[in-house]
Amino acid sequence: MRSRHDWRSLIEESDFQPSQIKLSRGVVLTFSSVLLLIAILIFWPILQFKVSPVSADDSTSQPPSSTATLTEVSTSTSTNTVTPTSTATPTPEEIASTEPIIPTQTSPGKTQSISSPMQSGLIVLAMYEAGHSHLFAYQAGDQPFTRLTSGPWDDIHPSLSPDGRWLAFSSNRSGPWDIYILDLHNGELTRLTESQQFESSPSWSPDGNLIAFESFGEDSEIIIRSVFDDQTWINLSEHPAADYQPAWSPLGRQMAFISTRSGNPEVWLADFDKFGAERFSNISQTPDQNESNPSWSPEGDSLAWASSRLSNHNIYAWNASTGSSYVGSGDWPVWSPDSSLILTSLEDANQTMITAYRSIDGRLELPPLVLPGQLDGLTWNSQSLPLPLPENLHQVSLEVYELPWMRTDSGYQNNLVQLSGVQAPYPELHDMADDAFQTLRAEVSTRAGWDFLGTLDNAFVPLSAPLSPGLGEDWLYTGRAFTFDTIPMNAGWVAVVPEYFGHEIYWRVFIKARFQNGSLGKPMREIPWNFNARFEGDPLLYEQGGQYAGIVPAGYWIDFTEMALAFGWQRVPALPTWKSAFYAARFNEFIISDDHSWEEAMLDLYPVEMLTTPTPIQPPTLTPTRTPSWPIASTPAP
Image 1 (cartoon, rainbow, N blue to C red):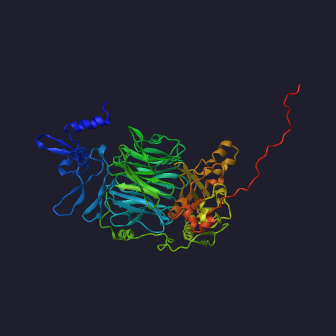
Image 2: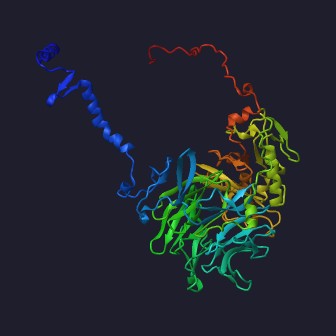
Image 3: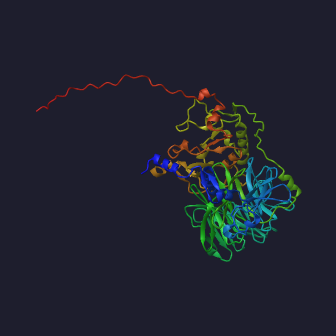
């Protein structure tokens, strides 16, 4: 082996110079030139791949993409615009983003294209705002939702007619819940039903001459009646179980609905070509799940519905030949006009989102978008709103609702305000939250017929009043929370239903309407939780914190959780110890954080010095000494 010196001498003896390479024809390359050439050979394909433009001729040779591709297209002017490249017509397996491109100006001469899956048709939603539910329309290419109804009442469960001209919905604008029909072409409103019973969830027949809806009196039944006269009135279900949420098949000879005939809410099918007991069949067959909101595809060959069990809120699609299959997470599905998408709401603990899946394989097509309020109805049709809107609808669309306690100047004070007419250990709330509470209290009193929030377990809690174990950093200390009185629950005037979101448990609170004549509240669909079952002597019931009550309570109820969310009050999750400690369930606590953390909310009331807990100093102790003992003999006794 040569030493390092031997290699150096070998180089000196030869004509080879490390700083240059002599090629043929007299071309000489330096060593740095060689490095530069190697770098160009390595990085040139990468740079060429990233910066090379795609011409219109090249685009046809590319495989169709599931999303719009943005390229720079030169025009006769000096302004460059960004437009989607043309691709071949996608197959059903390649259907992707289907909403038109919405241009937004980002810089001079540039337009950013944003794609969304809702390409065509008219979507109508019933959303809560400022304590009431109203109807809003979304149309492809339009700006955000167009308001269709307004007023101090609720409009829920919209349903578009097959021709898209008529919008049927349920409303309590005249007192009891009745079916109304809105003509979208001239803005005229017609009251279809007039009774003291709760009538909702309208569904049109394929020819638009009949409407099926649920009617709740002593029992919940499916009623079919004519749109043009009040002579045609058919009770389809005629069963002592609860039958509701009808969905008329576009083929005309079948109707899906939700029924408790098997003991829990499941999807049933009524076949008009059959008679007697053979007419009705259970198509979901899921005794451990609760189904809701069935929806037919426009072709009438598939049916989607929502199914819930504990923390699972899923959408399933059913076909007579293949059965049911999982689509995705959701709570209220509707089909797109071309059946390629399933649009659905997605409930979270304190907010409602909307998302869409591809019906053929369940692929996510629309990422979850947060809605301004909770959803209480959804419909999608291939038609569109008339342009321009009728004058009365145009005036309604211009209205803007704001909560009466909203402040635009953020001029509240960081102190406590006395709650007038409220009984509580400390009837005070933060200045930011007191108006929201009083507005909620007044609205609940009007909707329920009694002052539910007139007595509280707690409002503001001072630092000198310690709460139960596990509530050391509770929002009651901030003055931005309250807990309602639990005594009405023992009297049957309050019911709570557990709702699972991931690993956390929240509670939906219902309060009973004072007048049970149909003028207040709506029927409950959920089975409440019975905490008192823990004291019946069964160890299993004690360990699981109670059990379901077994039946849906009769009568009319107010969804207090829904109303509280509309006024900014959010619920909190139960503590892990809720099964053994009643207070840890926290079903009666609501907070209004205003985007504050607990620490920030505390600093709104207290100086930082009061929140700093000094480290306790242990008193000095003597060094432990050996405990004296009797002497032990070194040798054992005989």
